[in-house]
Image 1 (cartoon, rainbow over the protein chains, first blue to last red):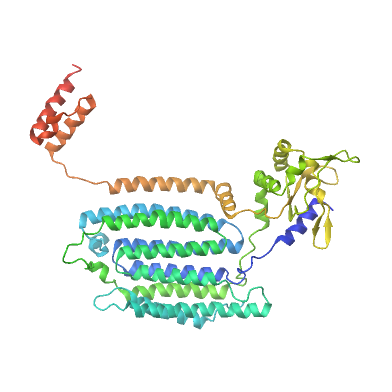
Image 2 (tube, rainbow over the protein chains, first blue to last red):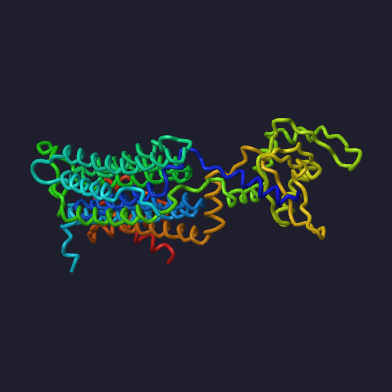
Length: 122
Length: 403
């Protein structure tokens, strides 16, 4: 018996679905992720405080991250998690810039109301 | 392709959730958070029933190992959704940020129970530890200090939502569209097995890890007491009985060279004699521990390595290989983006102060004095007016020195 045969046999035996995860699957993560994304959309549209609006974008990032990890587990590889790492990077960069802008706007206008900067819409 | 959830259940749950969020959003006057929260919990419960009951039915049909699906998913999903609802409905920004940390923690738990441990911990460290602290700092910086009489007063833009009904209709329509396409479009909703072939192939890249597992199993101490096989002129090492092997992988010539070097430093693993391994109803020659695989022409193609139990690719290792081996340019770009964001934040948040001409001159004079090594002296700071004059005089003197 050659080594290749050994390999294929053993690999076929080694594929065990972890107990307990057979039932909670991709759909659960996608539903939860999209619900979180939708919550973020609602908050971004409804709230008027600039800081809370940016918190709601972070909520949307969270929903997307949940979906990506779910997809990665569904396909059995780690690409989804790598995507989440980049999402985290962008979220950190966005938070730094957006919050600097918020501080700047607060110094100018002494308010965090998004409607106070209505003249920017042109 | 079966539908996983009854669509009527999904859509009624979404409508209920939308009503709950509309009620819970801040508004002027009476603010019935509690009623909104109750309706929201009802909606989530409806969706959970829709997800749990079919799973129970499926488990009953197939005589699956677990009667109940993993309860932790539902617990953490409930916490995540409830705290997300509080993030968008709490009138005070500090509490919204704290509820967002709760959302982060529960979704990190969801990552961990699905096997993505590295992402779970990275989420806690980066999001809850760094980004949210930045938010809290900015909330602290960008809030008027409360005066004595109106300590509990909310800002008008916090106390009242902008177009709550319209935005909830928009957001929950989006949720309905997304979930509606999801519940009908997936034929095999389960996750794949974690320890796949691709994962095991990563073990080729980690000879030290594999060797350390062999060490733990007592292979290398056994190598210190070898016996000479009379027939084949090779060293015979008898392994302990509990050193059973659970898998095998084969790798190419280039990898094999790396391994042979490593192994040569340790001992003659090429002569290792493994005990016979039982696989299914077949007994496999255990002497395949680490050996050349030859084709019919006798060409060495690679080496087969038997995998001892407990030798698995950890999640962090797999993510590391996926990140650095498969996406190196994206990683560099992420670093550049972070650097740019840092520069931008520094430029944006720098404090801009209006400085008069006299103060500018004073500042320039003081700087010149400092450059020369002389300190400003006591009278440089004692009186602003004379100090500026003194400084300017010294400044002239300093610039005149080279002439």
